[in-house]
Every structure is written in structure tokens, then in C-alpha cells.
Image 1 (spheres, rainbow, N blue to C red):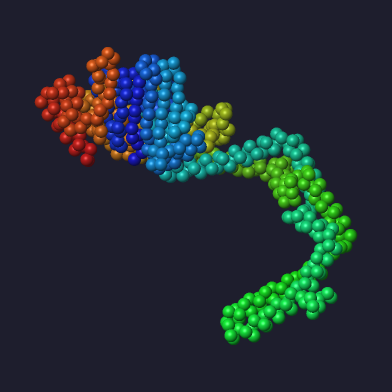
Image 2 (cartoon, rainbow, N blue to C red):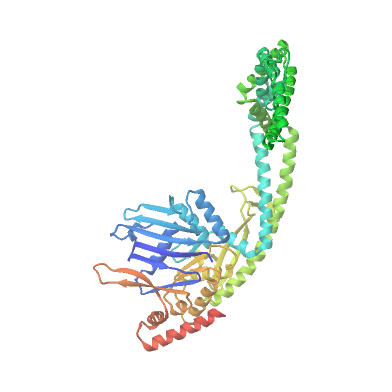
Length: 587
């Protein structure tokens, strides 16, 4: 499971310096009113790119620092690691990512991601992928229309995702053709001028017809023709030395004859000493090599040509190639590559009527395909919206909102905006790569109430519960792996509080869940229980966080139940609550 493993907060509000060791599953944060529980949520907001409030920074040491270690898995890890690496940061060797945010009393803010200083917006990008905070004063992820649409698409299932992928591919192809056609028409004059220049260059290169490596070959040939006599003299003398000729005599025999005499002399004595036989064999190899060199020298002499006409042709050919390399590239191979690129570019510059007509037909065909796929995606979204709304409504009934109902409005995106317009299911709509729909989650707080967007239809506490219900339904459909709930239990108690705890525990099977709560019925379901406590021993009140287990945990729940942490009856009640929660979690 992807988790935020650790959170350290320094100099923020009443918190001087404390570390929260977090775990996968459900983490609960409790404490007395004013102890600083909300500072934990505030710290999380800062760590993931939230707006900084210098008024919350402690005067000493004059800056607030929030640090966290994030360990991700799967597609979220791939996306986050790639973005961090692209920006110059590095995940640790174990795959975890270190994040840091510093805010001074003057309001200056700095961020570090993966060991590198980064813009604060980078923390926000990581937060978009990794964490969703649901609180009364937070910018909630699922209140943004684009995220509501994306979440509904994930909920709709793999068949819908496959259809959506086909739409995106078709849309990309359609926009590429439409943009290409528009550019060819809009810049026809400039394209034609560029094409004329390219044709002139190609005509010049075609007339010369350079061949790969020809300039080096001609240079070598020119050197041989210019020095033909000297080369011939050297080759003739060498041949005479190794294989005899007009100047070879008994007093000055050639190399081949000398090697033959030496070999025969040694062979005559090889019966006495085999070592001489081995040397004789090596002399025979040397004689063979000398014979081969002699033959090659003869062939070389036959190729030497001091033809002045050929030399003049080579000079003229090299001059023609130099004229090309002065204009188009450093060498002949570069000129050939320039010509290849020019031919490709000419096809891109084509503004002929035939090509424009062909692009027009392709654009129309692809537009029909995009409209058809957008229509099918819209129908699939509407079907998923009904299923989703029904499931969330059922969850709300168990969260002390029995009369509330969720609606998911899937409506056509109005035409006339920046997006291109197509007719989808008989309606003119603005179309993007995600289709022609706008998705909005709406809440009917009670029968007869108007259907309003979530942020307008629910109070702070209700909104957190609605978000809990939505996240429970969305669980397993993707989205951020870490979910934070602040004041999710506001205004509820009794059985409804138990239901909230049960749902949070269910959500924690697939996500890391952080919950700030004042209800023992919720805290009892935690995998890890953290308590924020005040320290009033010094001149300045500060708060710290500690993990409670076993007897300490029962005492904390007793305090939450009746304000009496040492009451035997309260502790017994707390232990009973813990046992019930443990049993519920095993179901």
C-alpha cells in the first residue's frame, strides 16, 4: 500500500516539534479541544502545496517546517517519480520520496522534493496524485468538476475506460488533421516560398548527384594521379627487391631467392635438429607472404594512371561537390542528408488542392468518429452515474444522513467556448479529449430540498461525511492512495458514529486513512492511534504527538467517552468498544 510513512512538524501553531509515525490502514488523531489536532491537518496541507498562513508560524524559531516521507507504489509511483526526476529531484534508493515545506514569519515559503529545491507548485502536483484532504476549510479534490468527471470515469469500469481511450485516440488524430489543414491554408504563401527554395536546392543537388563518401574517394584518387610517377618508381623498386627484375643479379639476389636459399639450408639440417625444421617452415611462410606482396605490387602498378584528362575530371568533380558543401552541409554525406530532409519537408509544405481536399475528407471522417465515440462515452457515464448515486445514497443513510440523496449530473458541455464544437447525440456541444460532458455531484439534503452542488448543499460536517461516502464507493477505482478526513464526525454520535468508524475502517483496507476525530466510536477502529497533548509546564504552551496502545489507548477512549481517563467504568466501556471494533474489522 502506498503510504505517507512519517510526518514531522516544527514551529507550527501550538506544535513546537513533533513527529507522527504513520502506518498503512487507519490512523486516528485525537486530543483535547485546542491541543492542536487541526495543526496536523494544516501541516499536511502545507506539505502538499497548500496556501501558507504566516500567522500560524511560531515566533520562535521564526519558521515552520513540515517534512514527510512518501512511499508510493504502482502507477501513482511511476507518475510521481517521473515528474520529480524530470524536475531534477531523485527518489531515495528504496523508492521513497522526501518532501519538505518551510514558511517563515515574514510569509516566505520554500519547498524541497527529492533532495532538490523546487517551486511549491511541485508539492501540489505530488499531492494531486498522492493525497486527498477532506476538511471543512480545505480545497477538496472532489469538488472540482474535472476530478468529479475523472472519478466517475474510473468508477464506470474497464469497459468504459477502454471506450474513453478510443475517444482520446480518435480526438488526437482529428485535431492533428484539422490543425494541419488550417495551418496549410493559413500559411500557404509562406509554405510555397519555402517549398520553392527547397526545390532549387534539390535541383542543384540532383544535377551533381553526389554519392556517399565520394569526396574522400576523389581526394585519394587526386593524390594518386598527381603523384603517379613517384608512386610508380617506388612500387617498381620495391617489387624488384622482393621478387627480382632487371636489376637483380647473383651478387644482389632478390628477397624471394634469399628466403628460398635460407629455407633449403635449414631443411637440410632439420634431421639433426628439429628446431631448424620449425624455422624453415616459418621461412616458407615468409616467402609466401613476399610472393603475395610482389603480386599486389604488380596489380598496383597496373592501376596507376597518369592520365591528365582523368585528373582534370577529378578536379572538376571535387569543385562541384565543394560548391554543394559550402551551401548545404560540411561534407557530401551531410548534403545527401539535407536533400532527404528537404524531400520530407516538401511533402509537409504541400498546399495543393488535391492534398487539401484529402485532408478535408479525413477531418470530416474523424469528426464523425469522435462524435460517435463521445456519444457512447456520454451514455456510459450516465449509466455509471445512476449506479454511483444509488450506492453513495445508501452509504449516507448509515452516516446519520438518512434523508439525503446524491445526484450525478452528466450534462452536455455548452458550445461556444474554446473547445471545438460537434453534434453529439443530436446536441451541439464543446468537445475535448474526454468527450462532450460536464459532470457535477449534487446533494439533496432532504426531500423537497433543491439539488445543489456539494459545496453549497452541505454544511462543513455534512460535507465531510458526504466525501467519506463518496470515497467508500470510489475505493478500488483509483485516485489518491492517502485520504485525510477532518471533522468527518461533526454533529453525530451513537450508532451513526460507529457506522462512520466502520466505513473508515473499510476504506482503510485499500487506502491509507488519516482521521482527526473527537468520537471514541471512530477512534476505536484505528490501526494506529495518535494523541495530541498539550504541555503547559513552560512559559509557552506547546503540543506534541504520541502513539498510544493497549492500556493507554483505553484510557484515551475513556477520556473521550466521559472526560474521566482514570475511571474504571470508563476504561471498561472503552475496552468493550475496542473489542467490538476489532470484531467489526475482521468481518
